[in-house]
Length: 196
Image 1: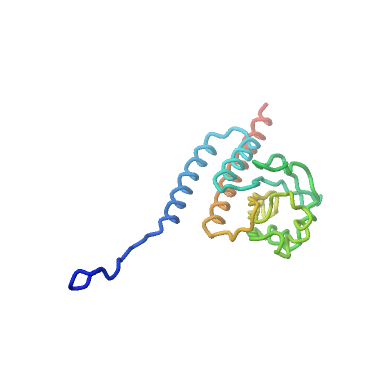
Image 2: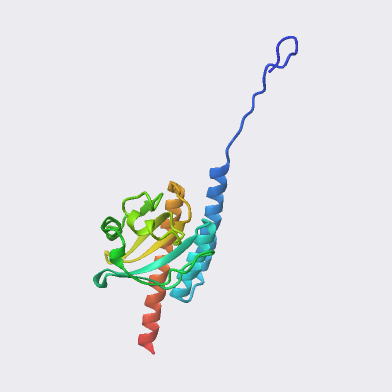
């Protein structure tokens, strides 16, 4: 902008933030690749592992894993976990290590998103003493079979993080698509074994 005499008064600048659009494009490409991986998967356990790695890398997570949950035996099991710079969390833990509010939400099929595990009352007790876990923020997407909680996908970050709707939706879509494929693969395996 100039005065009538040509003196510069100021400059109008228009800035357009395209971060969200770029993230949406990246997520779309990620989901397309995931769909291809699911379509050609032959083994349920290998699919779970491949998805945990791919999603962990896509979201730059410190940890990503599918948990097997046995409510009646008070147990959660991690067979394999993506953990690029941390000690593995593979193994079995009592399900009761989780706060009852998290278990209740998961059993109801509700996604649990925690921005800071040391400040959230549902996780503060667990993670206050576990500073090496690599979990400061997490999203847990429950997976149900016939209305019963049997598994969950957990994505964790090493720093506190306010989860966006985009991130939560992406984790949920990945969990649901993967779980449908895993159920199909396991059923196919049972049918093959019964025919043998």
